[in-house]
Length: 606
Image (cartoon, rainbow, N blue to C red; front, side):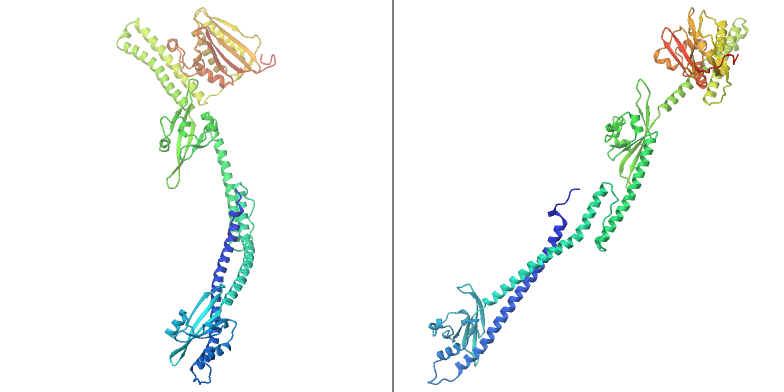
């Protein structure tokens, strides 16, 4: 997490806000105080001047209204004497003006030449006309404030004179400036104290917030062990407690989620089915190892790719089609070398509002199921065909006999012989099928005994030597010494009979069949090789399948059921051995099988 700069921090903002609030409050208080102070000082100054003027007014009225004798000095001299006795530091000049705006006297020595001259002062004329006092303030040449008062002197209801007073009010404003300077200094000092207090107060708020920020960063990295310090019992303290409680709950939730994630990962890893999960746009976000193995694609080539493309369905289906898919989809990845078929089931991930949040795809390998189903259909078809062929033949001959052929002594025995042969063929087929059925259901037991396989094999070959109908030489490459193995003689006799019968059946006249026995480590390896027509290389491994014939027409003509080698395979495997074939087309086929080999002391089984 990027660290917040000092000039963007809430600490600085809080201090600035606190200082600005105090500054604004002090400015408002200062302006109000200055205005009220100025008003009060001016009123006090003016009241003081007016009080002194009232005394002066009384003296002037008395002087102007008394009866004068010839010995008395002129009114101008008398008034001058009155003014000369009036002195004040605040008053600059006092003039006495008669109703005709003529100056009768002045207190300023330098302005004595103005006596008996008319004044053009507007305040004086207004005061004479209205019998009311007027005042004003102006700046003199020295840029000092001068307060002027024009006050009428009334006697007998008439204005007998006007007092024109100029006073120095600048002292009042000087006092106001001094007080403002004192106030400004106090404001600056208060702001300094305010800044310090603001920093201290801001720290009480920002320190817990900083701790919570560090804890949030640690939580983002998965560390839930650290707790936020609780600095007080106020709202910030309650927030810190709530944050610590949240940390504890998140730790518990994360532990639970991690546990569930491990469980899910374990389940997905050990599932035999492949599982794929997508986001709401159909891109793959999760796939287990089983699905990767089924698809044969590296994980990095699958993630974030559209699921239809990965499953090879983009030509036929879109993601929206898969979301609406009700049943499973069969995906065929078969090639010339091997069949490979998958079944995909689709499940939609939806929120409570119905919004599609993704898709779950479950892949199941049904190759073996399809193979079994195909083999089952083929098996039923083969059984039906194998049974129908002799039955059709028998019905034809029986119908002929029923139509009167039984009366013909030459034809009837032949027809009956064919019917008997086909019946025996069906009996063999049914017997083989029952035997395979018992093998499939494991409803048989091996009556085993320790047997010298060399003697056992020679007896079977001797029997075929006496019974062979072809000019085929039987060549024995069998060691002279005894080789003991544990086997069921009846069932193994059937196995070897089937193998030798096939070898003799497909060997041409003048050919030979070779019998080989070898002792190898813990087993005996037996081989029966003929010089028949051979089997194509692509079909060699199929000769042990039920009803499989390399040459079907020739096999049926020779009376085979197509089950002999299938039975032989089951029997050999039941004895703990293996069976396989090697063949070269046009040169012959060799059947190999093995049996467990037991070393027995000489004479023990004589």
